[in-house]
Length: 471
Ligand SMILES: Cc1cc2nc3c(=O)[nH]c(=O)nc-3n(C[C@H](O)[C@H](O)[C@H](O)COP(=O)(O)OP(=O)(O)OC[C@H]3O[C@@H](n4cnc5c(N)ncnc54)[C@H](O)[C@@H]3O)c2cc1C
Image (tube, rainbow, N blue to C red; front, side, top):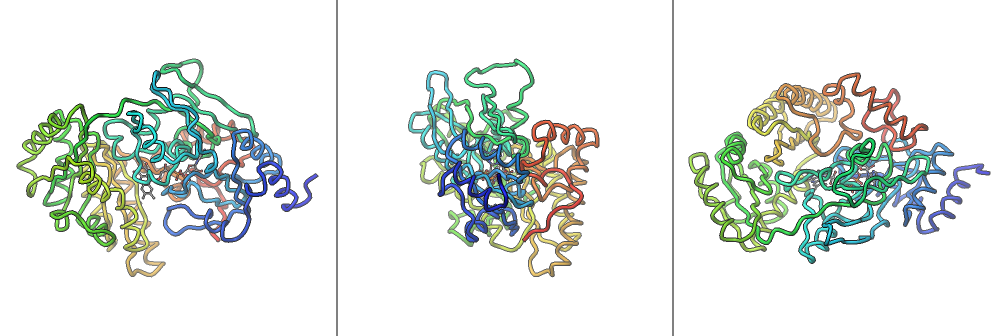
């Protein structure tokens, strides 16, 4: 029935409509990238279904014809998860963008995979409801992508990553069968918890088409506190102290001077932040402004001996937004400095200062600059190694050596090689440093059980013998 790739595209068009299949080169180039370095792999086609039923038909077709399928949300991933490294089809969920229902009695929302996270959050806030997971990419990333990566963000410090908020999933297996897992119940231990297995599986086990997410009432008051430090290690050490003394910030972020300077190149920094060596940015939330001001004062008093100057307290919503824009834009700002490689390191919170030290040592021993920022309250530090003016050969050699040294230190500190960005394409070679052969074997067998013909996001997470070269 299907003689050629063209015949297959024709059948795809019958399933998802003419406007649901794109194969012109500009579109292929656009969907051949995510936010990972400057990597690009061209797919053969971009498929944009509108419903779970259509996703099922597309996957059934792909399985029958052994076409690699790479699921894609907002394309903001930082480990190359959405790159079609084996060609085939990009399966974009962007048109599954309905908020199906908000249930304010049970405090939950059912939402399709292609809803942009920030859009969902604003919609809920209008109803005084709160969905906390907030990757700094919230204006572009999508709920399906957040689930596939178990994404976190500043507020995971108090509220946890996406995983904690998922009650149920609708997902499609590689062969086209639709799974409905969990739902409105706050508890459910009937059989294996496959929803939790799919969360963080990076589009390699099934395609998520919708999710039921837990909500909480929107906290009535928020306050932002910016704490200055004389160096990054001092700021990192203070993080443990904040929690040890009983404070419970919603968010606790860290940025070093070079990261602040990078943001300063794309937008003006609030006065007082432009010459700092290191900054802790905290969000407090609760019932009323007065009690938050009191909490902020107590945090500042507790850290008075460690800080290098006066804290900034922002109560007004627009002042708070200005401070959080620094954090939201730092990734893009650092990317603008130079070609780079990011290591998404995480350690137990009390080891954060040692991690900072190890990151700086690994970079400087290779003559590289490292720019660090991240979710300090989670012990999660993004270490960005910059290429600068190095030749390709010197950059590759020094970067690989620095990364290996850094990850060895991370593991020695009891940490992990990815806190929230996933293994994807770029971190595969490091997985065996952290996970035993037995664990990787179980993971591979799970992959085979879910996707026996291996069409779903092939080439990711595990090292394979003959990876395709980027085009
Ligand atoms: C500026 C910036 C800031 C960021 N800040 C954070 C942060 O604070 N915290 C954080 O955790 N991450 C952060 N990220 C990384 C990224 O935004 C997250 O990983 C995000 O969840 C990816 O969502 P996406 O919709 O863009 O997914 P994509 O990049 O499109 O895909 C990511 C992975 O998910 C898979 N996938 C996508 N949709 C589905 C689906 N429906 N079903 C199955 N698999 C799917 C893809 O195959 C791929 O493996 C940031 C990225 C940028 C560029």
